[in-house]
Image (tube, rainbow, N blue to C red; front, side, top):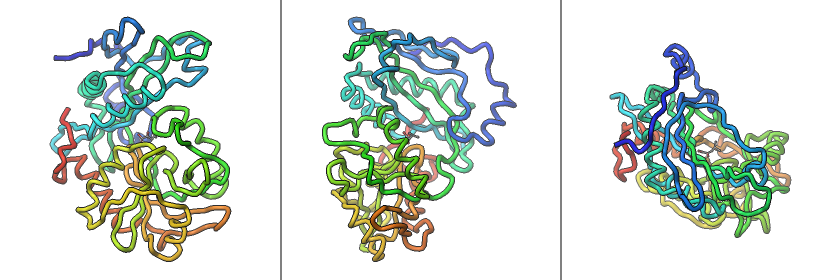
Length: 357
Ligand code: COI
């Protein structure tokens, strides 16, 4: 039984235009024809869930999101398999994180079953937009919530809008990435919003990404706010290090984002002969390890980025350093393939992560 009412668009994308979009989707360039929406009103709770044609919204210029940034989001993907079935990967982890993000930002909490139904019903309706899995293409889903109440005082809003939009997606990074270790900027601090998936974290990252580009790097390696000593995450992704004695090292949770891909890769590590270790990791340990060969592989991971090899670092103290021979490492490639194969149904899903739409 559908939870969402459906108003169909009167101007659907033609088959030819959709196929042209799916042939080279990019990321966020094209959008499916419908979106899921649920509005929230304090006192009344969540209103009727509906799927409506994709269109612009009218938003009052005083809407709280436009002034104080009360906004959260998620990212997950739908994958088309060889038998044409369409699957989601661990959507309940995104639903649970969305609850945590809402709590941190003082927003209304969306029940997880509504989150899951919104994603499921939108994908079901728009299944023609799920690319065939060539080049690991998928349909990227973007659930998000904004504070919609027009009110200029600084307090949590009384009205919210939750919505899900979707965009066909190719690889987010088309090549390996180098990381700039910024001495100037910090992504998160204890007690801050680092663990919430809120737009403000990403807005605050942009100037550091400009600095990274000016220093020949595609992304930033974030370090802790107090000492710039401890590695946190990179750009829009978590970070992992393979050591020469068989560990898969990643920073402990605390002020970083609890990535679904991160969690999944840690669970797969043992199958690749690696011991998963979550602990504080210093910048010096990383750069010494890269220099000495103790860390022969580094990669970043996230829903959009999947597993992206990190081939080098640049920092004011130590200059440019290359990881091993500057090409993606064996474990990095194996782990990436394993994860993608589970998502596309080509490898056994031992952990029961995939959900058929
Ligand atoms: C994701 O991997 O889903 C993200 O949220 C990264 C995004 C900001 C591109």
